[in-house]
Image 1 (cartoon, helix red, strand yellow):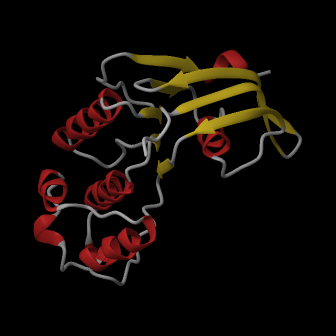
Image 2 (cartoon, one colour; image 1 turned 120 degrees about the vertical axis):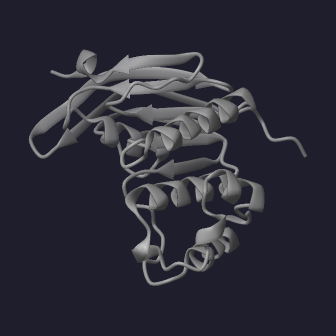
Image 3 (cartoon, one colour; image 1 turned 90 degrees about the vertical axis):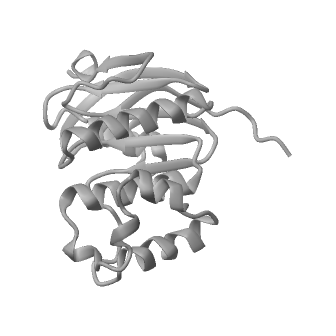
Length: 196
């Protein structure tokens, strides 16, 4: 059975934290193959918007429509620090119903680290491991919150390439990043336009 094409749309979204409205009146519509770059100063609401769009937080106002499975990569890799990397990835593979394949692990420079406990991995290695899990999920909609933090130049280019390939294959990517991104067709969304 063929899955319907992914879709992500938001209408009049607003986000409130305490007494402060971070943004309001935000709308968007992304279809298969789209990539969106969320930009703005620290604390403007990029991560909050990602969590709302992914269904992990409720908007203060407005609505979100999602069609397709969702995967999130953020600053928390959600890998058991005491487990060897291979076992930590296998845990998620059983839950996600997919797995990080040998070619993906090789490409991400992780194949030789599968017996190393996650707590001993560098920041960049943990970020690449989280990306391996995201790829293994086969999610149609990727939410990437600061995906380049802690990565060297080669790994940054690899994240851009993998994200571009995901979109070229019909996926959607929403990326919050302070860094410029080399992804074809990447549309910017400046969060400052929606602040009050």
